[in-house]
Length: 401
Image (cartoon, rainbow, N blue to C red):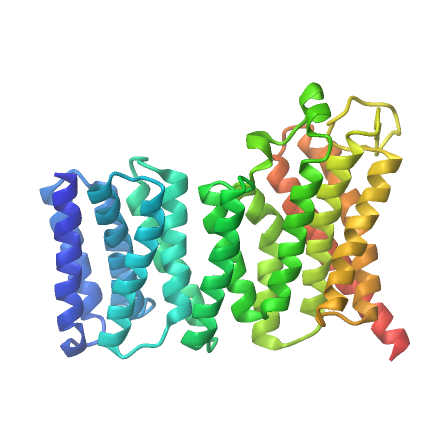
């Protein structure tokens, strides 16, 4: 029955797409609502019906464009069909992504749209969510709503991104992400989340910004493997052998992605400073934590009292030096790649170093009290590093003219 519903949804979406150019505004959304009601009364897929009804209403009132409405439905149903027909092996994630792009290309061709960035982001988010949610009961409904809203967000930015640029970004970002997966430095959700980050960085800001982020991941991977046996003896090693998952990618990269989008839309250098500051913070924190934990008993950042290795908020001299190196390394990469000038280099170096200590402070004050997890600490630290760097850059620019 489940597979039958997926096939019905796919075929119905194709038929509605075919007649949509001949329908008045809002009617495609109304037809989706009718289809949702039919699914509600005829099947047990209540959440899927609600999700279809929700995006149908958005289409009816003119919020969701026809392209996004049908592309989102077809991306999700295509992914469902691929996994149902192939059994859900690892290779099917790639096959699902490719098939989703192909069906979206058909939608664009038929409707006369050129929204390759929306298509790539929608397909990537769909497969990413599937890798996270798996066979969870309401997974398909969640995927449908999130894909539609993310594609709507990309459309609303009205950012021009031609096919050659988007295609190049896909090849580069997915190529490096797959390489990381093969080296076991990223799992499947980590692969697709890192690829999504990479595509956005390249499209909105350029390949140099992506290379800076890549430098961070490489530096982090090297630091993670530093004295791994000793870390295992202390039980402070990274889970999964240091393989990064989607939580780690977004906790460390979400601020950077927002900065890249901001720069792509406005071309204002403050977003360069914010980007470099956030990445420098993430790098400094990773290196400080992975190397500092091997330097003996750390001290709590708030009281300077000795604490066990791996304690949130614990700092050491070696860790501080390693963190400063990480911030300098990323800041220097920004200069060498032509992204940042000397003022941004100085601001990011200082901002990144302050950011990693902010991470320790937040870990002690809030994470240790279970107010949030490590991902929350990392996100707020990178946000703080970005803001501090942007403010320092503004001050330096004011005094240096």
